Image 1 (cartoon, helix red, strand yellow):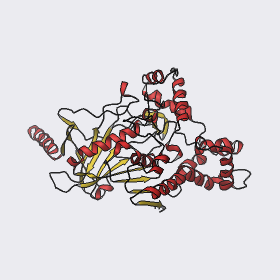
Image 2 (image 1 turned 90 degrees about the horizontal axis):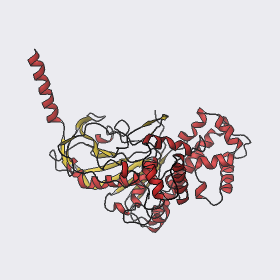
Image 3 (image 1 turned 120 degrees about the horizontal axis):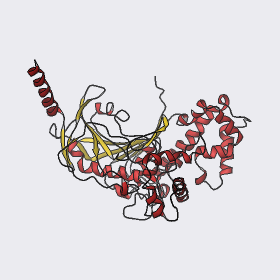
Image 4 (image 1 turned 30 degrees about the vertical axis):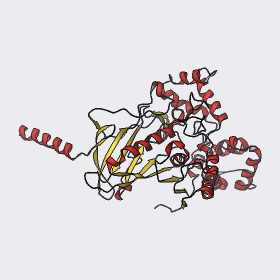
Length: 442
């Protein structure tokens, strides 16, 4: 009986090894696993593929460095850890690892099974540039790969680790966007080994991922890396997706002072922050919260100093108006009631209405994050109050919750959607598709 037991174990191991898919890419060999789609289709999954060197130590606040070749067979059967962030559902908990620059590839066919190459979707997760990940339980292939696509998902750096800028070449910023760009180069180089067509790549994303996808259109680093963009509920023109130079310095110095770091020079500031424990760095995002109902993203994409390695050297609006971007077909849109997630804070904490009533001008300016982008915020605020809340003397859950949904949605998603569509229609030589998703779920 013992002989039978051990023979069974040995046979199971051999069969598992034979049926687990293997792929050889430019960086080394990978062993993946088999997953099933919603429709029961067997697909090959390669999870936790490193695409860059771990951004630790001296590589913190630096552009990603392509991964070095490894020896042997890399186990690509487990999803990678997320990049460091506060747990969305429990902000006091810090999750993720700084060694997080990994991607996942899901494919219904490998080259030895067919000569046909499939279109590729590179999907960028959302999360306001401060949270989210590529984990399969969040961005899995179970629905999409009932159809003939190859899906790539990835982690990119978030928060200060992904977007700290000192407005110079000491820390130019946009590291999270550069992580995405390096992934696109990886896809161009390697996706054929997974049955994907390197000349038929679409970059897609939602919220901050949609904004990121739009940013990839604007970067000179990405020429020829994709054939289309799907930007869902976000664009580079949204107020929450870009920082001014003034905000960059203010936020970098505030973070540095929180840790007792010098701010006399960019070098001193950045070198000091490189030594801060990663969990403490993530926790420190709380110091930027002006109000519980604010949409606070202190570290965001920004214009960089001129450099051959710069991801973005002009504002998104200027690049779009000039036509100086990667002009490909664009599909972009909104979901009905985009503002409901932010307005929901007033359901959980009705006292927020009292705070809004007591100091409407400052609170709404903070909530909608537009102060740095307008010349006279008081006039803008008065117009917002009149248009959305009318002559109401006191805002309450009963008389103003729908108004809050609308103002959050219009200010943070609707305006930049319209600006992006109209901007592309003026200059693009390719189709621009716009949608509104309004179907009510069961």
